[in-house]
Length: 120
Image (cartoon, rainbow, N blue to C red; front, side, top):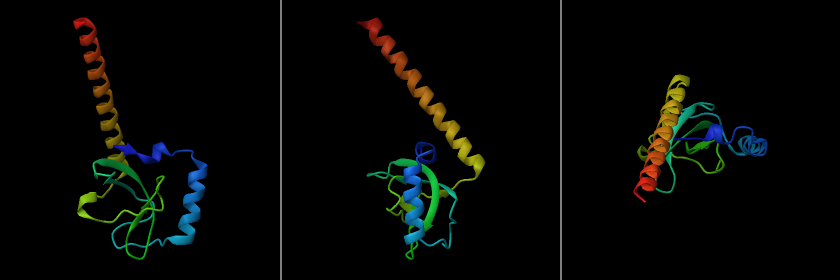
């Protein structure tokens, strides 16, 4: 999981660009989603990265615009995206799970390095 809200926290230049883009290009109505909702969705070149961020607006085709460095690039509400609206608790649980996975991966990597040193 990549928490885009944390990644771009405090990036006032990006925030200013996003606000200007929203005001000039986006609408705030969608049949399923609302501006400001926290969502998780699959993205990346192979749709294999789970991102979490907030909705900043929509276009007239129903495409979803998000707070991230590609704010001008919409995400379509397609099955492959696995878009899910997150409550605050679900968002926190997702962050905790991710932190535990990162910790476990680091511990395993450190143990593997120790084994290599012992073997050499």
